[in-house]
Image (tube, rainbow, N blue to C red; front, side, top):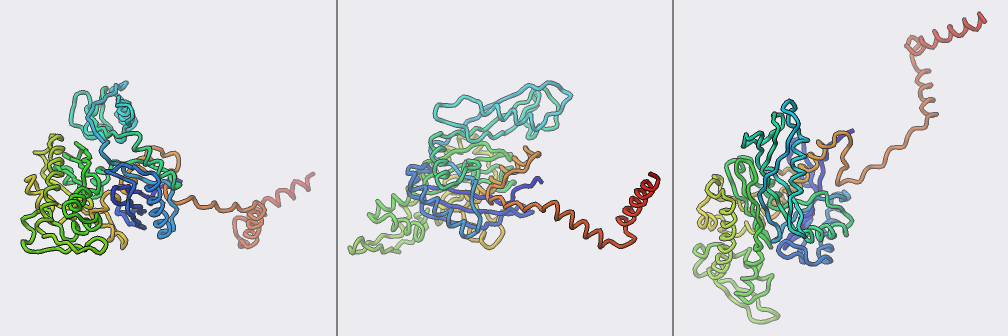
Length: 451
């Protein structure tokens, strides 16, 4: 029996945290988070795995925890990929069909997508995503879905996402060492977009800015189509590092200062408020003004936003983003950040939460910008499995989460026959079974008498 999958698992391998979560899809396409576990990430720098053992230990910890919480054995998972090595390019491909009489089919589109995977790229790189932007049928442009149309020449404009093979292999190695397999590798800004952007925003034009610990991911949409993706190798960690060096304190103290007392706008900070910082190993405590702290944060955040605006300008859609900018990720929770972004870009700004797609009690804890990528990975996982289910209607797609249940034991033939005899005895005298048996008995008795 063909069934769609309703449970998916994802692993978000970030610079500051590693998250494992399991989600269940409801009939209304809402997600219920069945289990979530996170831990500190120490083996990842700027979105790239640099210490296999530390990363494996962290993944193992969150996977074991979420398996105990849910009672579900994780097997195949969806994993995000980011990092400075990620780049994108635009290309166009085409195929020639045999006849005008036959309509363009899904197979034609798939053949075009397969050809796009064959474009030449640099040694040591691989194609992560091939995203069609628009189709052209016999010089008729701007077509979103060509299936069902007639035409000889089918073309498409593609957005190609490329990454280093070594980075992808290191992620795969970490997952395999924990006894799991990668079902699909997903570009993190695409995952975050699925979790926090609405269809109306994508149609009007919007830029997603996901400020993580080690990287800031960007995805630009217009007319419902992905137009540009980029990964900037700066995130919330560089702000923490600036505070640490500027105040000569420990890194963990700097992180607390940033989250509890920090502000992205120095002018909004209190003039005379002073924050006391405990001294290291019994030394005297230090004091820093809230305003000085805010200006340290603002200086670095403006640098990050300059890089963001550079990428948005490169997309060639900066003047067509009617929905402005949506900021998400752990860095989005910095106080007064929306005001700074609005001041620097002149665009409308909001903070992106994944709440629109979530239901259930556990999901309330996940409704934070820092989990946008994690939730998006689950959503991309369901999209991936649905496409596979549609592509292979002749057989059931394996569920990527739950181990297959033990098959029920077959009932012995003798038992079945005995049960049928008992049912025959219990049948009423006027039943069809008894009538048929009586007719057959009389026929055999007549034949015996004649012989």
